[in-house]
Length: 135
Image (cartoon, rainbow, N blue to C red; front, side):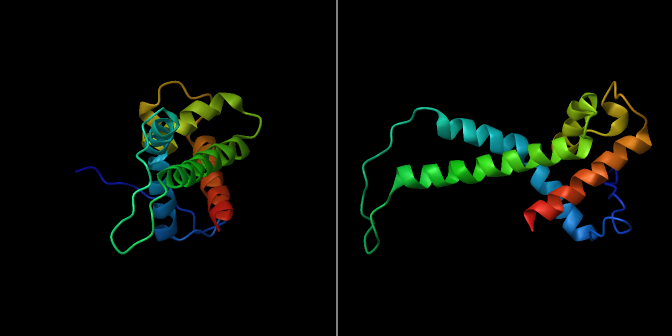
């Protein structure tokens, strides 16, 4: 079974291994969050508000809207941190996005407009920015 390597972020970025793993798992949910957001925006029949025995009436439209707001905020946070991490190097956006959100390794990305070290430097910067934004 291949080993999942952790980025060394304890030096200049000061992110613990467990916090890094939490952020990494958050990013791996990117496509799932986009898919759920698309489903929430699609038309669907919303049942009338029904009282649950002993509880308050349900508000499905409100719950759907709140869920959509949270999913959209998560997706935008990842995209914002990606943009900030790459700076002016627009060609690095797609490879870095695939690496972070799909878990595709550098060697499997195909064409990347930089070498390994600058790529992982941007990746580390991304996780640092994401950590700051999520706190």
